[in-house]
Length: 94
Image (tube, rainbow, N blue to C red):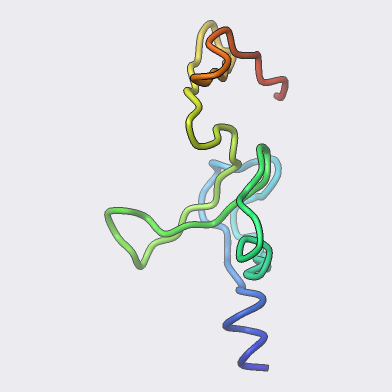
């Protein structure tokens, strides 16, 4: 069980409301530890990462911007652009 726990799946409790309605406060979730060994996160995937200020704290967030992109919020809408596509596009989600 220990190799599975440390190398394949990691459990977390969700604390806070920042990911509602996808994940509610006090949800118990299991995080896949293997996938990102073989590929990078894709847009709209949920990731768990350590806080840069406090490495004992974890954040759970949805990925909307990818490396090299600029995320801009205008009129409550999310626009994403990159060096290759300066016009960008509107991220369609709630």
